[in-house]
Length: 141
Picture 1: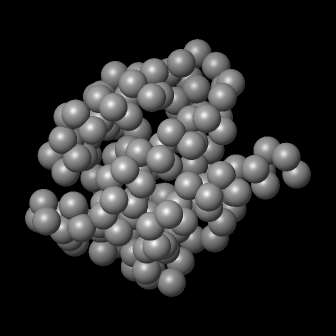
Picture 2: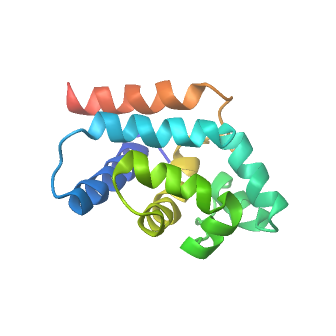
């Protein structure tokens, strides 16, 4: 997946959040909140480990591979991250935890896939800057 497809995935996530919130304002802040939340979960590496520990390793391996991404549902997301983490994300985005879980279930596979073009997840700390740089390039070019 190239950076344009990744950006489309991230922008799609932000559009859905904007739709839930009733507008498109604050996309950079929303993206930063999502990327910061992912970093708080241990970054992409930590998320992959959580999925593997939860018996969902096959799913995340599909996100890293050149194969089609396997889907994940909101119940699996809640199982992997726990309700408190999703409530925290929801609070940052202004949505309930079930909506946050559904949004992550829809877009996390695309984000992981887009950030791992060589089949390896980025190092921790790179995610926020990578996401914001992609967004900045799309919004301000």
